[in-house]
Length: 589
Image (cartoon, helix red, strand yellow):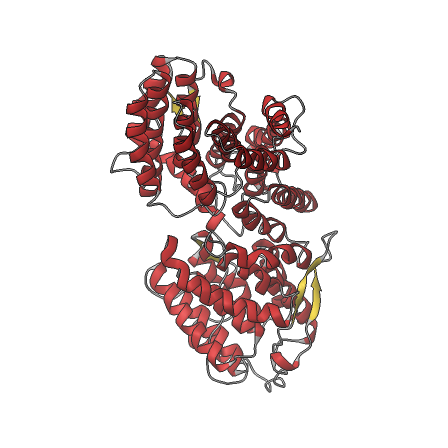
């Protein structure tokens, strides 16, 4: 969503409301991943002449070894064993492709698998791997035609392709990917693939690669929110069993994180979160994934360190490949900017946002934006400048909200997404700019209409109520404000808990606490700040709000604890911030 809100500029009739989906993409990205892999079959020799090669040793009998990428300065991609019947000279490329798949480095995986195909044109598993790189189920992204085309280069039909796989195990992998790219809808194909993987996992219970790819297939069929918990726990248990045997397995460490990427399960993933970045430091995504857990648990310094490393790795990747700045990992960058606001490092938060401006200056509609993954001619996805505008809007919105520098929005009419639209309205209400606040309200009404994307409509409805509540509070009618907030928190309670940057951009429970405190109802405010900190642990504004409310409510001990935690969060904050002076004074003996 982007546009202008006042007459004389782009009017509501020309507002690109459809672009609202960019905001939900920002939320879906903390939850979107990729991959797929394996299933059962029958034995046969390679189809194209000559005797079949000797069967490879079993996976459990093959020693795992370190896999690295020679083009990366950090190099390491993990430790794994994946024996196949391919030519000896193609094995290193194949293993590198599998390792990149485990860390969702799809372009690098494709390159490695194609190198293996060049060295052994009948290497069925090399085509399997390339094909899988065009399926990213946890990012809700796939390119079926490219996946099918990769298989078609092996042979024209599925039966002939499967016949080229010399062993039962390898035939199983081929049959699985055939199910993935078969007829039917994406959910039906994902389930067929998971069913095939379940069969393969039962046939090869000690095969780490089979088990890890099975775990991922389960995650590809997850429903939304708490309904996903049984599958998450099942997939997580499978990945944990492999991780226990091989703590350097990139797929095991990685899938533990995606399986437990839910507020109810997040503590289980902390050990893998701390391990994964060390297992596969060559992969930007491996460096980012620990931040999912650090953010959910409120470990802001660790989260910012993870995303700084991830961003830098993506910049290095693009530089090595002489790619455009538009292919840097903006997903890590927008997370980093949010994490910096939780640390009170607003100057640096503004600085990292300029990276988006630099990309926007060169981006075209044909560009594919890196965010959360890289893009190139083989992996077509993203939405060019629109994706960057969405990131820019969210970053500006979060900077203003967390710093409370409302005056920096004074006189603004433009907005790049729903987050920024809402903050424009709140700033107008705080600055007594009634006309601008009303104009924003009208746009939020449009965004919450039944015809809009369900996820965005859900957020817009909450943000509309929040804006009404802020405006009522500023106008001195707290009763109206509290009525709107009761509705807002009820709607928010129906949403899944955040697994990354929180949505809606301002939590209703946190805002309710702020409005209650402003109205002199400190004891009630304490309760809402406590609820906010359950939903979004250790958020600095909620911690500070709790400290203030507890002090007003007469609970000096609770207030002191909260102020002390706030000072931990802001230990390296920008100097001179008034909140720092307030907190230091409150804990001074």
